[in-house]
Image 1 (cartoon, one colour):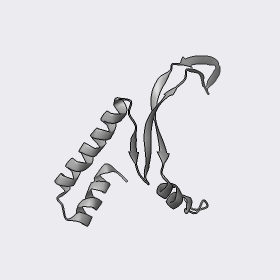
Image 2 (cartoon, one colour):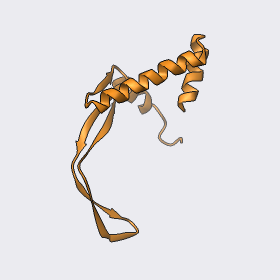
Image 3 (cartoon, one colour):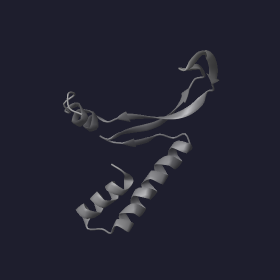
Amino acid sequence: MTKRDLVVRIANQTGLTQQAVMDVVQRTLDTITNELAADRGVEFRNFGVFEVTTREPRIGRNPNSPSNTVTIPKRKVVKFKPGKVMRERVGQLDPEFG
């Protein structure tokens, strides 16, 4: 699903214009991004939690030439932990399908 698919689906369900829904979705995503960029987490009950963590420096290797190593510096990354409802719904998927 793309952002456009989400906007169309919400517009059809609510009767709002696609432009109005796009504005709300984009502002929501911008706000989440701004909070994470300010090193603050974002929590949506039953959906999940976005948090900023620090990934320690490590050694990386090119699979095509494993003798060459590269130091990957320490950096901040976004982690997502799904909420209970999402874990349960996804857990019901058939692992043999897809």
